[in-house]
Amino acid sequence: MDPAVLRDDMVDSLEHEAKAVVGSERVGVAMREVPREPFVEDDSAAYADRAFERLGTRVLSPSAAGRLFEALSVRPGDDVLVVGVGVGYTAAVVAEIAGETNVHGVDIARRLVYDARSNLERAGYPGVLVDCRDGAYGLAEYAPYDRILVEAAAVEPPAALLDQLAPGGRLVMPLGTAGQELVAIEDGDRVAEFGTVAYHPMLVEGEQPDGVERNRTRREDREHARRDAERRKGWEQSWIDWDERV
Image (tube, rainbow, N blue to C red; front, side, top):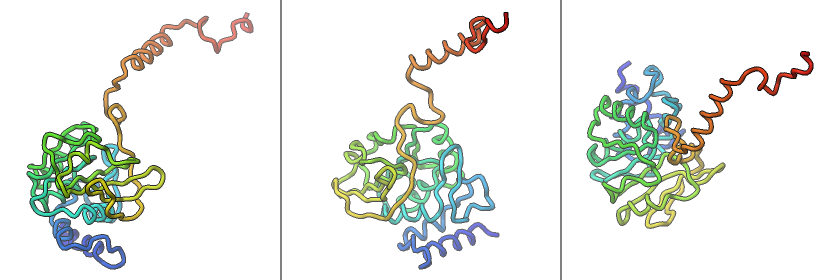
């Protein structure tokens, strides 16, 4: 079936009162335009309302993504930062609304940065800038931002991200640990809540699955232990009771 038809059906279901996660015309039009195939591994199920796994991260379901877009309330021409850009789908939809050169994305996992760049180009949004950064520190070089979207949970919004908001700007992210709430923050205050969610916690440098371990002492201790175990002779192995063998 024509992917455009599938996208229309997907958005129709999100706008229907049974789900009602998409209510604004701006978001609905953008989600009808952006293909999902470049961002998922199973093209045949790209428009099913379910999440996917790719390169160790979660590709949001259309429903979950729609909730983020409605909470973010992006306008044409807004400067937007997407933290935890993942495979790039949310950045593509935001770029469809704001303009691709106004959208910046960061992710702490380098392989996801490369994947997002490739996916965005294939989807038709090569102008979105994606960089490998610790999301808690944002991307100060291009600040201030009218909108910041964080696709990872934290107990409190990172101070650096709040500092990078333009006056009157909005930050949307899940707050909490076991119980998370999707919230919008403006001028340091919660101005809206959008229900409970479940996102992975925000990672810090050294926690990314494909990252290089930066604690040299810990690395060296583990390597010395491995080499020592490989060099041991039988009499050094504590699990052999040599007295019983005599």
